[in-house]
Amino acid sequence: MVVSAQKLKPAIAAKSGPRRSGRRVALLARYPERDRAMPQFISNHGLRMVEASLRAARLDGLELRIWDMIGGREEDVVAELLHFDPDVVGFSTYIWSFPFFVEVARQVKEEDPRRLIVFGGPSARPSMLAQAPFRPACAWIDVLVINDGEQTCVEIVAAKDRSSQGLMTVKGLALRAPGGAQAGWTETPPRPLADLNELPSPYEMDLVPYDGLAVLQTYRGCPFTCSFCEWGTLESPKRVRGVEELRREFSGMARQPVAGALLVDAGLNLNPHAFRNLREASERHDFFAERTLICEVYPAKVRQEHIDFLGAIGQSLVGIGLQSFDNEVLAHVDRSYDEARFEQTLHQLKEVAGVAIEIILGLPGDTPENFRISFERARSLPCALRVYHCVVLPSALMVRAPASDRLVYDPVDLKMRSCLGWSERELQRECEHMTRRAESEGGRSGQFFWIFPPPGGRW
Image: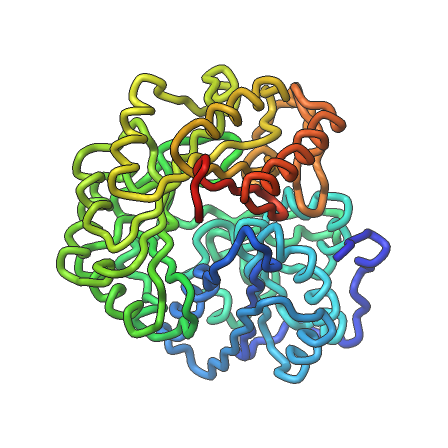
């Protein structure tokens, strides 16, 4: 879908008055367009966590409906929403769903401006709405939920006064500042980090009715602050899932025909407390005995206990996010790479798991020649490879890159067009080269990445 400022016209006030105080709530998420590089379905975990929290809160008068969509047309979604007639509409936004939901929100708000429009998820940031195609949307998006959204959304729905002034007491929000769409956003105080053991599990509540892969989370945050990544908050012990909580979640997952679980932690081995709890919970429950675990590891922190754990899983698929083999390039984006341990760790992992190296095309500070060296070295290793097109994420490079990085990126899908070390033509040429190589080597090309099988190997 092409988004333009002309299309995103300000909502017309068909009705007037204070915002609605009812508790008819619509929550929406949208899976990215399917392609050969993304073969398995994964439910939107953020949306389901918010749903679980709202249902567990048992708010008087709550009527909740979920749209967890694959594809769909704007006009059909709008028609369904208007038939439901919600008081609060919450959208879970990512780079692939943000343009679609901005337009849906406009039409829903236009029909009745008294509705509260709430955007959450990684793309719900003032920096995203500062992009030229989306600036008009400040006229109809009322609230941005920053970071943890479960309790925040409960407090929004529970509020009788949903004016901007009334919501100033809710932590973890960005609210439209007085003075209209040009006035920007006012942020409320940050919400304290949630204790994951106190959050209801959508799997225990049987709210995730899909096969494919379950989504597993044992902690939130990351000990690293790489500038290209949105994890960027230091880990906290309070955000570690307990053994019994994980065991119960496995039981809920097992009630659905899932093939396994995607671990959405920053890394299997970046939080020792969380890993020990996961290992013990897996020993108490046979969920992974014949199922798949997909996870990321940080190679310099792999220990024998991680190797043993992965070896006991039915099928382990491990990603190693190196991003580059050049420490100067990595230092430019606040990352590092331990050359001495890497190959030994790779071979240990290969003994117990399917392994894919991950690198990024178009990092600021890299060059086409240097990237090609990383690519060819990765292709020489006995493992799969994923190459990601660098994207300028709203809480990462978009707000953290220095001016000297000279970022130029698509304002809708956020893919890097040019930056320090890369001209637009050089970056485009390397993308075309990746597509040709993927085609000739039995790989797959997607919108944001390319995947390659092991050299001479099969999927």
